[in-house]
Length: 392
Image (cartoon, rainbow, N blue to C red; front, side, top):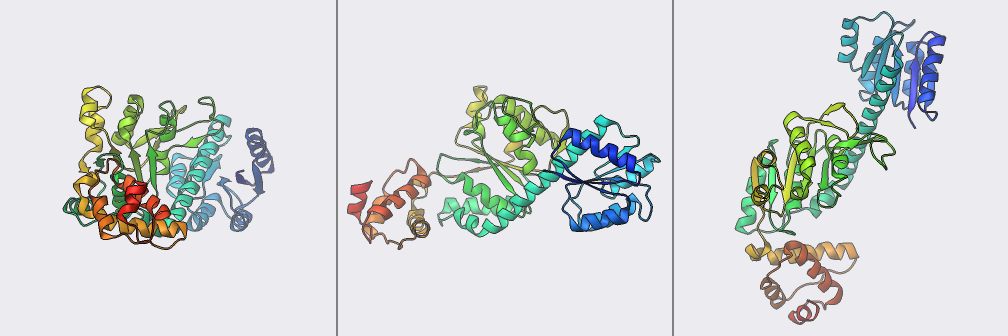
């Protein structure tokens, strides 16, 4: 639960502020300091989620405290309050890093709204930092998992385009049949971009019910619909400064498409149940196995959104169009699967590889990986043509 520090030299005001916060949420943990020096000591020793701070105080005023804290903890929200405030003081506090400024006596609704918004921001920063740390820990594994294997001409062309578009913020639309590796292309673009140290948030639009997709993308406020038991940030907010990958975007509802279009146009999103707009800086990558031009003709996809997401279009070829990559893919999957199962790497005979190259692979690379895993579990060492005929 949130830990809040009230910094105010007048005891009566501290008591009023504390009572207001406890009425809002009895689980708030609240500390008090009557001057800036004591407040600085508290902040150095504790991990607060919010500081509510008076400006005019003995020993150290609120602006000096704000300056000192922002140098060490720039993500700690400060709500400044003062009975002697002017517009200039308010603007100066905001410039120095304060989340908000409220005049005394504080309006109850205004104060609680500022508190909620400040705590939301702190939570969002924490979740983004957690995602970023997880990304750093898993980066090596992720890079290996999403490595693009092959040296065919078609794959080399895709890699060359990725190298050109990745350093920019241009939106990329990735098309191709199921199982061809569209997700790999998206991850490669993100990892080679200037946003690689920020989160890449993935949304499978086909896996989320149409009535929940807007909440998933834009977040929601507590009580905005049945089951919304608390405020929740959406994927756009979580991907701020990073990359948002909208997989299977062709399955997105028209109402959600309209909101995505507005978010791309204005760089702002609103949570379900809220009128407040939040600015976001997100690079959007999108993918689908559907023909969006046909979907547009049928009235199932917005043409204006299509043009927004497809500044650059990358078509990932089916595996049958790059069969020369199959030997390399078999070797790659054999090593990965053996590592996952903690077993010995099995070899494939040349006849077995040639037989696998002759298949149509309607499920593309995903199907090939499943077949390789099945053969490693059930087949001999080396895996033979006979094994393939028996188990495939």
